[in-house]
Every structure is written in structure tokens, then in C-alpha cells.
Image (cartoon, rainbow, N blue to C red; front, side, top):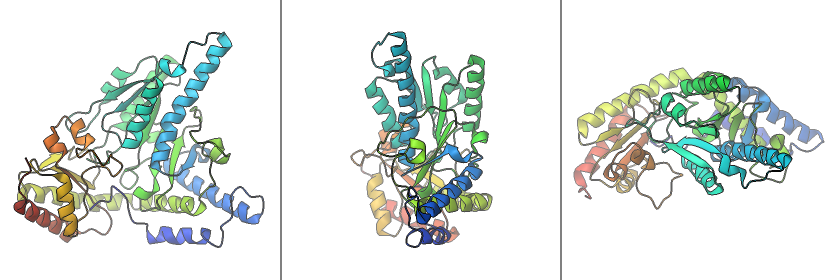
Length: 400
């Protein structure tokens, strides 16, 4: 029940990767046949991924994870713009301090830590950052975004699907409105980035439909291998590397390419795209059953997030008075894996920053539980999970 944290690798993906572990193990930077074969496999995988994203192959940049893709999108975009500002100042003979001091960016209070920490780093560099607060269901409106944009805004980063509560943001409409604003201004800023790591299994992630300039995807969320992600970057978006030491990925991501993981990523994304509607319908029925049983068996539980405008596989509840971490351990002892918050959050903080970001008290944030559904789970698993949780709660004294 924790498929939002990671997923098992699909056997078909494993088969696709196998030849590149031993038989075709060449370094893609080598000139001889084995290297050429590896390079060809990378470019074929890039093309396959681009096709699903409705993008051009050169606009897909492979990274070591979704977290790295977010870092490249956010820090790389701002670094490129800072360099441009600095060059303008030097040409004018008016160097007036750090170019970051003239820059503004926008994100939300409920983003993944890999996004929030990038913006905190930008603040340390002098960038002014606006953190948009969602409504009680986790929604941020296009109007909120537009009202926050200033003449200094360089980048807006908002996740497509929240990894803790599953709420979907109106990314296509926000992107469309940003494009209209840019057209009115006659300028290509601000850029719009979305972390779509949780989305491809259940949502269409075609970049033209979403109207985004940058988008993060992550193989481990779609039954692909861990350790490989990708960043879509529209061709005219300025981007600077955040790692140094090699020429790979258009000089934007230095490191010897991990050919088997790249091939596995392409295979996983294709399989996700092919089975998306069928799996979406199947999992949505399980989610609604889960919600109905929670309401019946555990009436004190409070649902977090939007029930309708959400991914079909995430159910997040709070049980006020309970300790979420203790409940996770009790569930684990009974064979049920759940989570209190994103696995990437600081372990020292018990409260979910997402639940706090909805405007709820700490009693809700510290008692939050996320159940995320996936392949292999069936109706009886849902019934059993709710029964076990109900039994644990009946035996557990409230902590407050």
C-alpha cells in the first residue's frame, strides 16, 4: 500500500534491460562498436520517451533520479538566467551585485522536498520566492499563480499530482494562462516547470497538452528501475548544468550514461502509457471502495485532499489523537505497508508539511496516513487493510 513511494520493476522491463548489463555493456562515449551500440540504445530510448511526451527527442535529458531532474530544472534555469543578467551588466559596465537579487520565482508550500529545498537554496542566493498556499483540498488556482507573477519572475514550479494526498493541479490551464501572458508581454518568461513524477501511470503527460516548458518524470514511480529520471526541456529554455565533469546529455548532465536503466525507463513508460486507461479505471474502483470502508469502519478518520480531482490510487487520512508513525509500525507488523508522508521528508519532522500546508492543525499532520494503491492489489486486499487498521485503532489509546 505504498506504491507512491516506489514500485516494483515490471518483469518486461527487466527483460528489456538484461542485454545491457553484460552482453552490450559498452560505454556510450566510446568510438568502437560496443560504444556505438550503447549510444544507439540510448537514443532509441530517448526517442521512445519523447514520443509518449509528445516532445522532440533532443528535449529529453536523462538524469539520475526525479530529484536530480527537479534540481536541474530549477537551479539550472535560474543559473542560466543569472549568467545572462551578469553578461548584460558587464557589457553595460554596470556590475551591481549578484544577479540573483533581481530575480523572482514561484512555487507552492506543498511541493516535494526536492523542489522546496531547491527554492530554499535560491533564497540563500538572494532570489525572492513566493510560496503559494493551496486551498483546503490542495488546489492552487490559475488566478493565484497569475497574481503572484511580477516583471522579475523567472520560473514557476508546481507539481502535477501531489505525492502525499494525490490532488491534481490544473496544470494545463495554468500553463495556458502563462503562455497568454508571455504573448502579451512579447517575452519568453516566466518558464513553467511541473514535477509530474506521480502522474504517468494514470494521466496523459503530453507536454503540449500540459503547456509546460520543463517537466520531471521518474522511472521508479512507473514500475521502472530506480536511479533514472528525465527532464523534458523545451528547446528554447535557457538551462545551465548543476553538475560538472563531462559532456553527456548535451553538456547538461555529466556522467557515464546508465544504458540498462535508460532502456528500462523507456520500456516502463511505454507500458504505462499502453495500459493507462484500463489500470486507471481498475485502481479508481479500489480507491472508492477504500474510502467507503474507511468512512464506515473508522468514522473518526478525516480524508485529506480532493476526492474527485485526484489521482485514482492515493488515499490520505488523518486520525486525530493518534501518532501516524506508530500506526505505520503497527500496520507493518500486520503486513500492511503505508506511509505518514513522503519518504524524502526529514525524518526528524513527524508532521506532514503537505497536511500543514492545507491549513490543518498539527494533530492532523502528525496522525496522517497515506495508502497508495498499485498493480497486484485486489478488492480483498482493501477490505483486509481497512479491517486491520480498524482493529489497531480499537486497541490503540490516543496520544493526545
